[in-house]
Length: 417
Image (tube, rainbow, N blue to C red; front, top):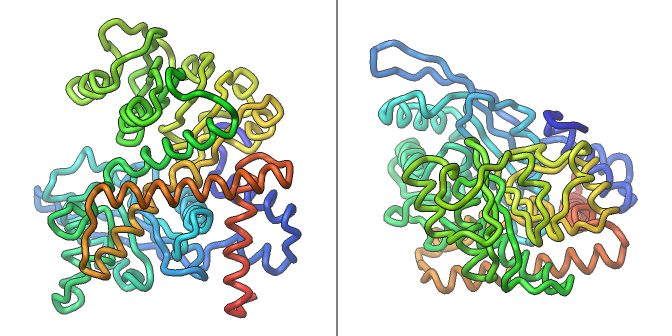
C-alpha cells in the first residue's frame, strides 16, 4: 500500500495479518472481512435561497456480535463508502481491544459543511437522521461526532430522532452531545487524554522518562491541541514541533502548549508562532524526538518515508495514519508504534461512559470520568503489550489479535459462523 491507498483495502490487509496469526478458519475469516450491513441514503435539503440540493450519505454497521454498533458521523466533501467501511471496521476492533460491550459502525455525508449556513447544516443533519434513524438506537447503533461534526449537530440529530419516536427521550441513542442535553463531562479531551495514558505506559515499558521528553504533534485540530496540552501537563513532555494544513513549526527549546493553542485558535494556523521556525509537514515527521503524535489524516507515514522516522514512540491519534509497509519498516527499526485503534480509543471509551450515564440517568463528575478512562486505557495497553511480547509481533498485530479473537468468540457463541 502507498499514500492514497484505499482505506478499506488497508483495513482488510491489517485484519488478514492478524487472522493468519490466529489461524482463523476460512469461513470466519471471510465473514469478518466485510460489514454486516450498510445503508446508502439520498438527502434532499432545502437551501436558504429556496432551491433543493441533494446530498448523499452512508451508515455502515460492521459487526454487532459484542453489542450495539458505535461510531461517528463525518461530514466531508471527499467522503467515500470505502473510507466509512474502513472506519467501521476499525471501530469494531477498537471497542473490542478496550473490552467495552459494543460493536463497530460509521457514517458519513458527502458535503462541505464550511460552505453551507447553520440553518442548512441543521436541515442536513435532520435529513440524515430521518433516513438513517431506522438503523439507530441505544440497543442498535449509536453515532457520535467525527470529522466536521459537532456536539450541536449531535443535539439536532437526537432531537430529530426523538421526534420520530413520539417525543420519547432517547439521549443514549447518540453521544458527544452538549452536557446540557445529556453529554458527559470529560468527553472533549478524551481521545488525547487516552492517548497520553497509553504513551505513559509505553514509555514505562521501554524505560523512557517522559519528564522532559521531546514531542511533536502532526495535525493540530481538536485531538492534536489536547495532545500538546496533556502531553505537557500529564507527562511533562517538551513540545518541540507542531503542524497543520498551513505547514509546520519547530522550536528545539520547546513551546508553551497553552500559548501555541491560543495562537492556533486566534489565527487559524500554527505557522507564525513567535520564536518558532517554519518546517514542512514532511520534515516534522523525520525530526529526532522521543514521541511523535500522529493526529491528522490517513497514509501519512508510508513505505517511502518510514526509513527516515526517528521517533522512539509513535502514537496514532488519527485513524489510519500509517500504512502496512511502514509498519514492517518501523518495527524492524525499533520504533515503538501504538496503533490507532488502541491509541485513540479514549474517545469511544468516553462515549461508552456517556451511554452508561444516559441509560442510568446518573451523571459522573469529570474526576470519575477521567479515572475510569485511565483504568480502561491502562488495562488495554498492558494486555496488548503482553501479547506483542509473547507472540514477538508489533503492537498493531497484537492489538488486532486480541480484538479479532474477542469478536470471533462472540460470533461463534451466537452461532453465526
